[in-house]
Length: 94
Image (tube, rainbow, N blue to C red; front, top):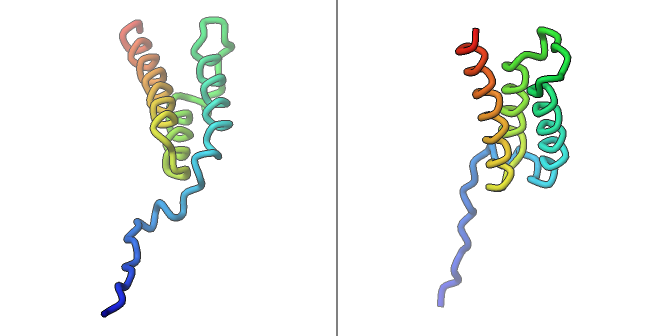
């Protein structure tokens, strides 16, 4: 009887380099509170380097560096939607 050889599991190189999902919760909580604060009506104006594109880059970096679970992906999507809706409102209101 021949022995069955185990084949190595093919994994993408990018997912092996990502940090585990447990690393995302604190960062997501921080981004949620900061983004909601800056979008509130009584928030002071932000410096130019902390514009919408900065926050979108932070969200993208989080997505690229950490293996997110579906609930974390939904939270990330909600933050993206908040930023995009705010940008759309500013364009239409101006």
